[in-house]
Length: 195
Image (tube, one colour):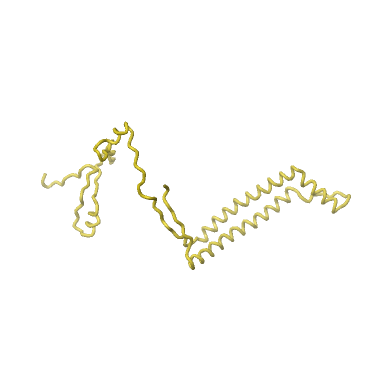
């Protein structure tokens, strides 16, 4: 009808866009534009159920009602060669502190288990008896040399110092890596899609 624009076709029919601005028109006319019909609720209709293959036969009828399997990828997986140029020292410090706390608790559990195993075997009783014999002779002393409180307390102090040193060393290593990467380039990593 004259004066009325033609309604766009089905959602799978490409339509060309015509504009008066040359730069926008060139960008939009590089490829076909597809319009999607939307019903009154704003929902697009589903695509057709049976897609035709190259021979004009429905893919689902050839395979007995099941959709045809897609062929394998014909191109090799994409790869990207990247370079690790800089480590943020603040993020390295935060990660190192979290790891240091986790390693501290693992250390305490390991020392506790080892102490319990050796105590069950009677090692600490023999060592405490030998120590008391060497130091006091016949007289018995009040507290044993090796006890659970002393062992776990010493392990906690050693673990705390090691955790602090680990976090500081990781942060210093981030600074050293940044300076080295500026001089000679960072670590090169190749990322690839899964096969």
